[in-house]
Structures are given as structure tokens and as C-alpha cells.
Length: 128
Image (cartoon, rainbow, N blue to C red; front, side, top):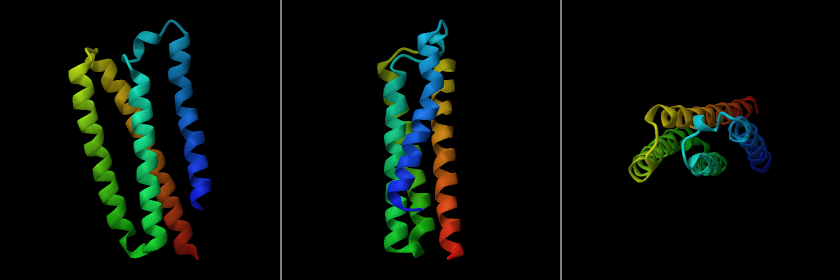
């Protein structure tokens, strides 16, 4: 799968996982979203896209370092998310359970797409 196609899939996925929070915002269930939820959402979406692009570029340039790049990028992503979460919680007063649910909704879905897409890409490379 080429880079452009993978980015298009990710943008479609990001729009797809943005639909439930949009619906919550428009209904009476907006209290289930943390304040500034969209900052959290787009930060993680951009971070995931950067991680995916870096790993795919490493795979194209030197496929021997694919596993190291994947693990390094995933470690970078979790650390960047934890630092963001600490800053976000320090600056905003939010209900901890609602924030935790929102954070894990966005983080785990983005990570699941990242792992699925990159492993699928690796499988396609091994078949060649």
C-alpha cells in the first residue's frame, strides 16, 4: 500500500471516529465529552499520522529497521500523549472519569488503526 493511499485511509478513519463525539455534542449528552475534547482529538490524530508517516518512510528507505522504527515511534507516541495529558489536566479542570474515557477512546482507536495498518503493510511487503 502506498503512502498516499494509507494517508487517505487514515483521514477517513479519523473522520469516522469523530462522528460519535460530534453526535454527543449535538445532543443532550455533551456532558460526556471533556472540555476542549477536540484539542485532544486532533492532537492525537496528528500525532498518529506523523508516527505512521515516519514508520512508512523508514520502511521504504531501509526495511531492516522497520521493527525498531515502529517500536520507537510507538514509544514516542505514548510519551507525547502522557505529557499532553499531564499539561491538559493541569490547565483544565475536568471530571477525571469523563476525561479518562475520552482519552482512551481516542488513543486506543488511533493505536488500533496504526497497528492494523502498519502490520497489514508489512504483510503485503512480505508477500512480494
